[in-house]
Image 1 (cartoon, helix red, strand yellow):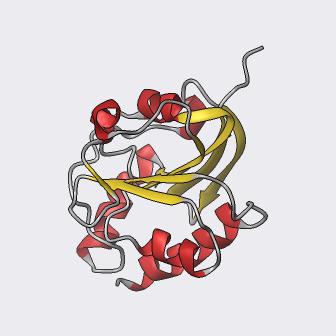
Image 2 (cartoon, one colour):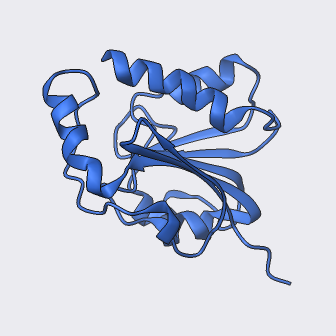
Length: 168
């Protein structure tokens, strides 16, 4: 694991999960090799589901095809998508799977700083991307969700917590 990626993982756990109930129903979209799910389960989270196109996920398939994967609408308290939305436009799908009032947790490069991320990957300091960053998004412009907190990390990444509005 590249040194900066390993460091970022530890910081993400602290920033995103501090104070979150370990009984929250969590979906991780783009779970990859499962590092987050393993960690959450090891600290007492009991209702975690990993979704990815890779075979190691709890649910294997594309987030864009979630309805055909047995996932119910509005069934998760929390959706996590670390380093995903720059690869695939799936904001509507995550909105549809999240309960009203639920929390969306995202990380992604700041669009105008993606060139630096690519350079850090080239030097082996960050994990290499698995596909092009064709959907870079500024979190302040994220549709459908209300921002709770958006943080700029090291001048190149954005971390955000968002809430799905409760419509009365």
